[in-house]
Amino acid sequence: MTTAHFDCFNGAAGDMIVAALIDAGADEGRLREGVDSLGLTGFELSIEKVKKQGFAATRFHVAMIANETQPHRHLADIAKIISNSDLPDKTKNRSIQVFEKLAHAEAKVHGSTADKIHFHEVGAVDSILDITCAMHALELLQIDPLYCSPIPVGSGTVRCEHGVLPVPAPATAELLRGIPIAESSEAGELTTPTAAAILTTLAEDFGPMPAMTISSIGYGAGTRDGIDTPNVLRVILGQTAGSPTSNRVAVLETNIDDSSPEVIGHCMEQLHKAGALDAFVTPVQMKKSRPGVMLTVLCEPARVDSMEKMLFAETSTFGIRRHDVTRVILARRYETVATRFGDIRMKIGELNGTLKASPEYEDCRKAAAEFSVPVHNVILAAQGVWESGSKSTG
Image (cartoon, rainbow, N blue to C red; front, side):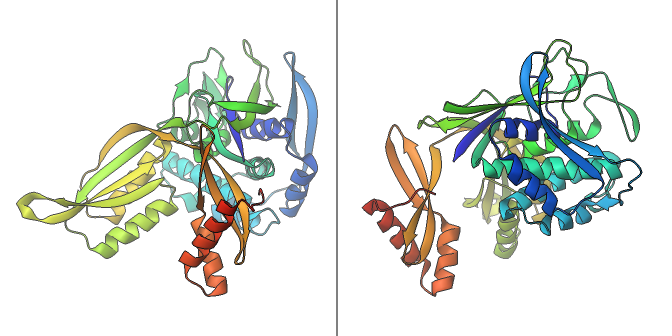
């Protein structure tokens, strides 16, 4: 797998993210095949090499065809378009996840609900192509994990569907809650809601570039000209150096003594589905000698608000403790081993040349169900193949 770092020194837009990934090596032909499978009409897509204030870059542009109308689209309509396409499942899931985040931000700004938010005609097509192509390019380049610099938002005002609004636009500001903002002298809107939704959904951390060996660099051009800084987005791809890296995570804790185990278990399932890095319970003794549990959630800083809302909605708690910590994680990659139960992915951790490997549980679970054997048997088989050295890189 490849690590990516988005260097947003002059902001970011959805089309700039796609363009930077194409410039870094994502296959244009396969991206166009993915676009064709969406079944959308009324637009022309161009991908071209340009120069932006002296920098060679790629531009990804969606032009709407005059006099061709587009239907009104809501979140459910867009999710259906993406689900019915021929894009890879991971691309589909990530694309829908980004749209859900964008819809929830718009809903909060407008006092509505995500299912009622209307993506206006031109913006819907533009956003669908930007988001799905960005997710597809990440998959084509085998990018995981993804990091991002602090994000500059610009200053002044921007004209949009609802009139003239201050920068950052309300939806962008909502999406960037908990994300470090970089200072910038450039006027205008530097970061769009689409880019903010993509980066905050996928980035593991917002800070300096992680240690890596650089393999490719891409520049994506924006549509305007910067005053002091070129209007381009840079993405740097490479392999991690094999040493631990650190990032910031939020820790949420709440003590509960009046919820059933079924309720706690359901809440933990929902937290994991919503993107929690981890969720677990610890037995505690509470006031009046009542036994209870401390429910702890680890999540990315950008997900704190949604995780807290879920804890309040799904449990009986009246209060949540919150603090930020730094975690250290091993450089990791995936390899595939061929077992008698089929191919199983192995998660490989590296520390100064020393490897540790663990079979991917979901692969083992599916294989166990297919072959009607205990999952432990599949885990042992995958571990045995790995340790014997007869593995194939995947």
